[in-house]
Length: 175
Image (tube, rainbow, N blue to C red; front, side, top):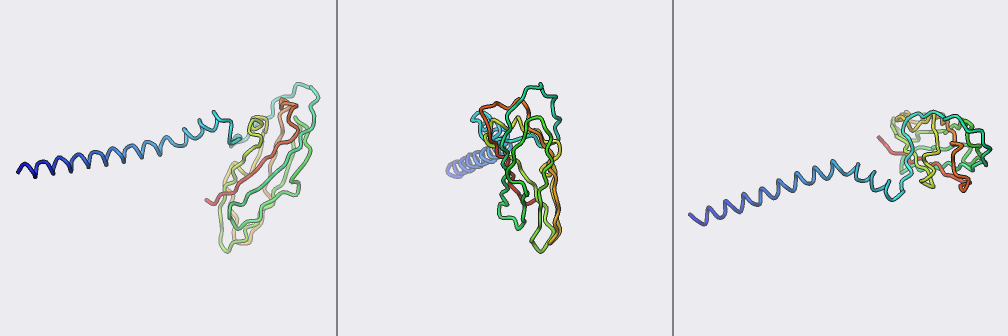
């Protein structure tokens, strides 16, 4: 009889540890995104930029050197052609620029993607002001369909003069 009670206690203890493990895993998964964002911010990596429209602040009127803006797209295994005819351009901080990206779905069915923007060097992300961007919403194209997707941006006149080049990259993810 004592042996049965001991076995029951062991089973209860194992069950309690398993339940505690499940609760811990759920809590960790829930906290993972904020932890990742905090870690990236502390280490100065992952130059995330705003994911919604921004407004250009009025410039101070100080002459600023032009910045070489490079644009890169990573398809991430998606069967789309996605590019801009202006992969590199000289931009004057404070001026608004309209850039068209061309997208074609080469797949045999409709597909929805989300473009995630990133700025390199990461410390310049705060100086990229996007008024309109295809990355703010998901993009859906039917099989063989093409579209021109707009980007309207400006570089803040407050950008440090030590930087002459910044790269704006987009990675496409299937939804």
